[in-house]
Image (tube, rainbow, N blue to C red):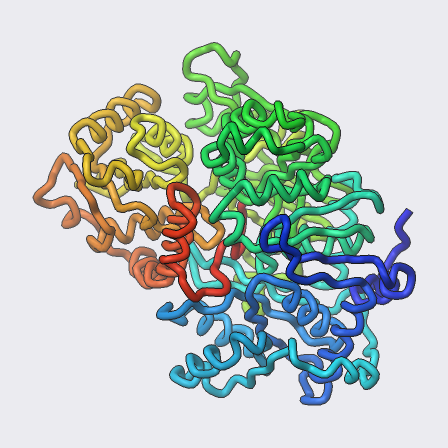
Length: 637
């Protein structure tokens, strides 16, 4: 039974005294190469030394920007900030030749006093920042060469549960990055939810490849093992993406019990791990395979089970869950020992914001995956986003959330905080609730997420979820890359029309039959969705607009289509002479055109998700110690 803590500092201090020599974090390159490790006592000492340095420069009560490659240095720096009562602001380091617009936006918003990084990155960052007037005045400090004897100079500060621990910046895919204010109390409550929901014990063992500047990697992969007092094996996202086998091999060799990631990670394993390689795996220890952060597909889970059941993987290990940065991390989840809940519904009714059950065998049905029930002390309601009243049973609405894990709002954005975190049900005056921006429904307490309000395509009064159309498209021809397409609407002569943008598999670039591919796309979309495709744009491998968390940036893809900036292989349109002239460049699109410039760093990573060999990836990023993967976007479950 875990005792109650007031802050994360209390948690680490106790672990360093009660389990001082226990190895807490191990960072691996390959499963046979352990690069570094930290015991609880070593982490505590490093954190105190970094905190003492921060206190000596007067940073207490200020913000610190953290730019680190994958490794244990980030963890020490993060806790160093907490020990010094400095608000940590995690972000990914800039790539060479990458525009600094995202970091500029974060620095302008958070106003950090100091930047923390490693000695290896320090000179490059300082030179890059010196060229930028907005960043030049920021003091830079390498934390991996701080004398650990400084730990003796650390002065413990008075911290309350309500104290701000860190700012989690959203991905900015639908607006300027916003800093979600996460308190110690938020983190401890959410850690309790994860610990109970995942049924963790001191015998649990994590295996995590998710980056620590993303809330799933930080809270689920770094803080949860500390909270539960069990070890975790960490690896870089690049190592996983370059060779997905490394992830499952680590689970197999280290007997990991808890691991997971977004749906694309499981899809990547199915596509890239051979039968011969599967024969080397033993996944029988894997008890919780959490699945979240993007649309969860029943088909992906079925394919993964079919591929890895011979390795000992159990269907019941899958743990679909829902959450976002604004709720610290998790909101809902099931029972760790139960199989995922699937529901078959009528696709036509779903398009009308209604939920009508259907048999799986019936044509026009669709399988949606349950994300569990609201965890302890959390409340989930479904609200009509227009009337601000509770939705009727079997009616799709916006997901609203309340509870102790809901964060404190957005840093220095009182109006947006009020709009997003202060919603009330007008019919009952219940509230405040967090408006997630996600659409879904509840059935017997089980939460089903169906889409995102801003992404829903409305054509002739019917709602169409882009992820459903994108899935149909990618299945229509083998030349189309899985998970690398965008469906969105544009206005043509006052009418909304459907546009498809999709990446081409690298092996098809030189032998692409555009007429066949586009013909298949149009036929499949018409057959399954009753929609006529207005334009289909086939783009080069690795160039589709995505967030750093691998979610399709549909709005940015739309603005790229509008501006003609997509990297087109071939395209087709009903009106090829005027395919961009009919579009309205409203203020939203103007803003998104600017955001498109920020996607250059994520494009390379999008190419990494499938289809590349290790040497090709290394050629793309020959000297990049870290790359963006999972900067969390609000409202993704």
